[in-house]
Image (cartoon, rainbow, N blue to C red):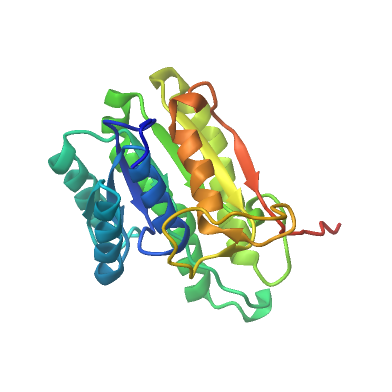
Length: 247
């Protein structure tokens, strides 16, 4: 673990933490000193991340749940309070992606994408809000390049992620009097299958595909004291991803 603990003494809930960006956020937050409470639907993946956090000398708890279900999210937040007595930050990272022409997109697929990428954030923030008010905490929503730029064949994803960016900006204003900072990160194309335990150096960072830790380090920055004055920000982390915005 690093000597300087920017998140020392903090408790951070991370959803979608079993792999990819969520896993990297959990490891980076733990490396920065946070106790992390991890959620996803796959317990085996979560337990592996718990072991990886322990190998770093950090503390983690796993709570398998479906973040689209209010009862599951309530159990998740209760677990965080039971484990550490507090919630200082929530990172809403859980998401699904369907690549399909709009006219072939089923109602079930639409609902799955919107519920996982957007409704789940509503449930998490609403449930954790009493604890976040106590800690004057942080909320970071992991959106997407498709939260600021539309593209063909990802209509549901764009609708959800644009909505998540809008929710972020609205909550930043509404929760400012409570001292709660709310920000979003919008990653570009990211390698989510890597099992490395720390960031991978890039020779050409603005030309190469993102590693999950590239996104995670940006999230941890927004959770840290260095970002205390930042709220309502939408941070594009695109790396080598290119997007062509068409009228």
